[in-house]
Structure formats: C-alpha cells, structure tokens
Length: 468
Image (cartoon, rainbow, N blue to C red; front, side, top):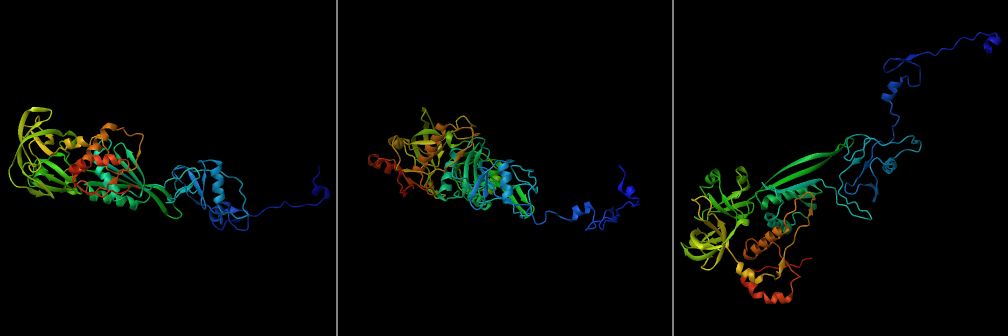
C-alpha cells in the first residue's frame, strides 16, 4: 500500500515532541500542565485529599462485636468480608469517588500503629446484645497473693474477705477470679485499682508493685491505651501463729522473744512474749525489711487438759486485752498419763478442768518449753450446738475459679472456715469489723431450744441485718 503523502506528491516533515526540565528535580520530561515529573507529582500531590483515611471503631474483647453507632453491636470475624463492608460503611466518602478494589491488610487481635489497622479504643460502656451482656473492658488488673505461698489461698483470707465486703472495697471490680497462687481482681479504671491497693495497705501488712503494658496507640490523635497490672503480696503471718524471731529482728524489738505469739494482724503485727508479757508492734516497713515466716500455725494446735493453775500476779492490760502470768499443770488429751508444767499468759482464763489449745514443742530444742498455750478451748460448749444452725451468717465474694487452679480439698477448706466461724463466736475483737446477717434458714424451734446455750457461749450482742 502506498502512503498517502507519497500518493499526493507532498512532503510532510515528521513531527517531534519537545522536552522541558522538571521544575522540582530538573529531569527532562514531556511538558504537562504542572511542569513536574511523575515521581515529583506522586510525592507532592495527594490524589486522596479530602477522603477519610482513618476511623475509630469500638471493639468488645469479651464477645468480639463492633459498635455501629449509636447502639448497635455487629458480630464479625477478623479478615472477613463482613468486617470489610462494615469498615467501608464507616468511611465518609464523596459521591464522586467510586471504590474500584477493596482488601484487608494489617489486621491483628491487638491493634498496632499501621494506617490500615482497626483501632481498639478503651471504652467504659457495656456491650449489650440480645443474647448476652458483656463486662466493661478491663484496663487494670490486681493479683492478691500471700508471701511465700505456693498453694491456693484458703483460711488466712477469710477475715480479709469480710473486711473487703464490709467496706465495699471491691464493689468496682469487674471480675474476681481465684488463681493458682492468689486472687485476681479486674477493674475498668486504674484509679479504682489504686484505691483498692491503698485499702489493702490499711488493713494488712503488704507490699505492692505495678507495671503497665501498651495495648494500642493512635498516632493521629496521639492517644495511648495501656493495661495496668498491680501485684500485692501479703505477709504470711496470721493471728495465733507461733514465731521464732530472727536475731536481727529480736534485737531491733528490744531483745523480744525469740519465741513470740502473733496476737493481732492489722496494718501492723502485734507480737507478745507469753513468758514475760513483753509486747511489740511491727509495721509493714519493719517486716518487709527483714521478712520471716511462722514456726507453727493454727492448723497445728494440740488440745491440752488443765489440772492445776497457779497465778503469779495481777492482770495486765496489753493491747486492749487482759493477761495474767501463771504456771499451769497440763497434759495432752491424747496422752493423759504424762503431765508437765508450763508458763502461760492465760492465768486469768484457765481453771482446773478446762481444756486449752497450744503448740506441742516436746520434740523440739531442749531450751524451749514443752508447750505454749494459745487460748482456752470451748469444745464442750460447741458440742451442745453441734448439728444446729447458727442464727447468723456471713457474706462471701463471688469469684470465678480458673481451670488451672489446683483444686483444694473441699473438706479441709470447710473445716478451716468452720474454725473461723467458731473464733468469731468467742472473740469480740475479731468480730468487731465484720457484718453479720440474719440466717433465714434457721427454724424458730431451733432458736428457742438453743437460746440458753447460745447466750452462755457467745455473751455478745450483734445487730443482725436482713440479707437482701
């Protein structure tokens, strides 16, 4: 085929396109309206200007739902088409823009700082769906454990539990869970956890430490979402424990002991020498400077029968309680044939024929006494009440039990709780800070038949509150 210009016999010169230099980088290029090369246009001109690139989406970690304002919660899995459509609907885009391609990238269970990541903001609202109601997001956690304890918490925390309930210290806790080595309290606000730690420090000797972990970060609004963790460690010393003080601690307390009894535990520890009636208080700072463990605990008490008591002197009031030194001739109930004389601080309470609870030190060092009496036993009066329901009862905290917890022997736990209730019956000081509630399960006939026994055993007045 012959070209048209040759057929017409005319000469037409070839057209050429001129080049200009880029106004930004100076690279030769074909001229355009901006006088900028392609690379400079991409770096200086944003074609997405006016489009929304980020959106804050509230996510409930309990049920995995996402909030669609104002009150609708939508269930969607990560990297699913439902979640992609939900995110696109939340973006505000002009009518002149059309979505050509859509995809998900950068999604993870814990949000990161990527511009294509869903943000998870801490909210204190409750996710309510027709099927269930979720708890608020947990932003603070607290682990309550006992120093040196590698077993599940049982008896030593019964009294602390009642103090927490009476003062409503854990009313703002989202969840309470019993773990393998303590109890976890979860709060929705850091200030609530700090207040609870301060309460624990005012009722028991403890030490605490805290840490925080970054959960998410919004670089556009400069918002940081932290999860705070508090660890509270309680001293292992309990009421009625027998303690052998270390030499340094004994010297700091004026050569007290070394064998002493723990008579009371509050924000400080009250120690008493049962042989000399010398006493001392240890606050939390003193204890944690040189910590020690009890030599024997109340679980190892032995029952003794008292044959004779010789009081040495008058009563002495120490720590709002009366004591009197005396020599008592006692024998183990399990071995009546062997008697021995011990020095005790219970001369004002014991009489011949009574039974007492104490620690058996017969097989220990020869310098120690053969036994140390702790308190009078009320087993005879309790036998009259055995099998009958108490007129009062206590509240208990609602706790979840973690699956990894080593299950405590239920019989042993119930025995310790029963001993705690018996101590409340005979000790006015112990029940001073505890709220009692009327036991509606008790029958009127039982109440009338045990009225005399209850009055002689308890000898205390309490206001029984109706349990709502």
